[in-house]
Length: 166
Image (cartoon, rainbow, N blue to C red; front, top):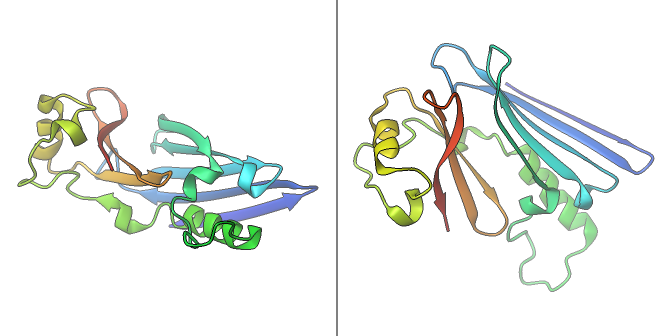
């Protein structure tokens, strides 16, 4: 399920994407929320939250809307126009919770621990995630090359980073 609302008044922008997905539980879906607020789309702040079916916040991260720009659609142009930039930002925002960014299993059985990519957690924690049959991973990209992968940790009672890439 995915809902989206864009409110723009007096040069203030407010947009929210709400999606429900299995993440912390294989029985009940969690609510994934991406919300932007600001005077201008390109200057907005984004709040990314995950809330369980028991209304517990298990992940909360803030970033700048421009972090979603990445390489953008016009990398060959030195100065893409503002319409192209805003269109690209909104597309990235609206597709943030696309099903292709959810991974089950979070870590494939044949995947090997890599200190460079997985060093954000211990090898033992990583192996626990890999061996869990119901662990769901979620990956998201900020900036041009920063991909973060999170998974719910029963031990910590919240989502944790288990892999970073590129």
